Amino acid sequence: MWHRGRSFRSANTKSAAATSWQIAFAALATLGWLLSATALSSEPNDALTIVWRLHPGDQLRIRMTQRIRTEMRIGEKQSEVSMLTAMELQWSVVRTVPQTPGPGDAIQIEQSFKRLILQVTQADGKTSNYDSESPDPAPKPLEEIAATVRPLLKSRIEIILSPQGEIRAVQMPAETDSLLRGVTAYSRWKNLLTREGIDRMLRQALGRLPENPVRPGDVWEDIREIETPSGKVSQTNRYEYRGTAVEGGRTLQVVHRTTTARSGEQAGAFDEPPPGREQRDTGILHFDNAAGRLVRSQSRQEIASEIPWEGGQVRVSSVGTLDTVIEAIESPKPPG
Image 1 (cartoon, rainbow, N blue to C red):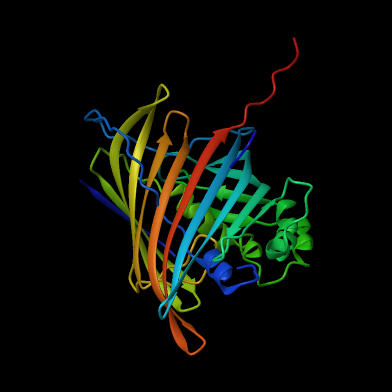
Image 2 (image 1 turned 90 degrees about the horizontal axis):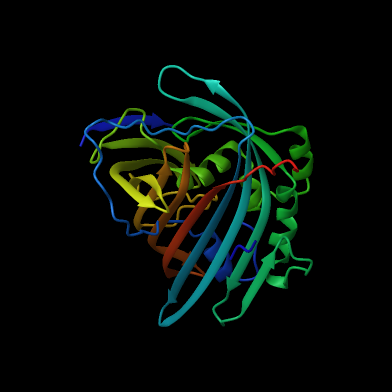
């Protein structure tokens, strides 16, 4: 798509219109975990401290690819739609901020949105594509989404990232506020620029690292209350450190995640309403502790719902995945 054991606990406290309800629902479906198979090795007996460690001047490219496939049944009629959303972000590290207690420094980052790719396949099999880098105009089913996302692609936001990968603060400059004035409130892309939206988008991709040193088998939890159209939802992310995997000559720390919601509902990474009644939500993080950053993550979520529609019920089954890859951007070498 892109061309070019022990338990530690901690507590932390809507979508662009399209031309059919099928597309709208596909855009609203939540994301999830794609499980990957990796051979794990055992850790030494010493517990390992896993933290983000970035330095002023570091630059990272973040590529997030969301795929949603939704089956809808109304009586005896059944249809299927799918949607792909790929986004490229860039992080530039401004400075680090010592924090106490706990290991590692908080990291001040300038985040910019670089590229958006959309692909929608409707129930009749027709596919529409949009790439923000292409000179071609957006096809009609995606015109409104393309128009509302343009200010987002020009915006820059500052965030504070904790050593555990949590978004601690979001600062939006006046320039960003000005760019967003013409964006409709219904645009889910506008929601990404709120603190809650940014936190929700990145939380699923980045996960949360432990505050204490861990050995294989150790677990920790991240408990959050999320505001949704249905009210507050208590969500628990349970993480387990599984050991290490050697890939491309480097040793990666592997963490598995399982998410549960007390009410059986959960808001999505793009602030979608929580339609699910039956769901499974899991994922894997691959972290390079030597480099002090996440390398990649995969997530998968399966949801079964019943949605009111024209006096009846629509039975919806949706599978969503989110794949995130983070790469270092090397500074150009001086001539000679």
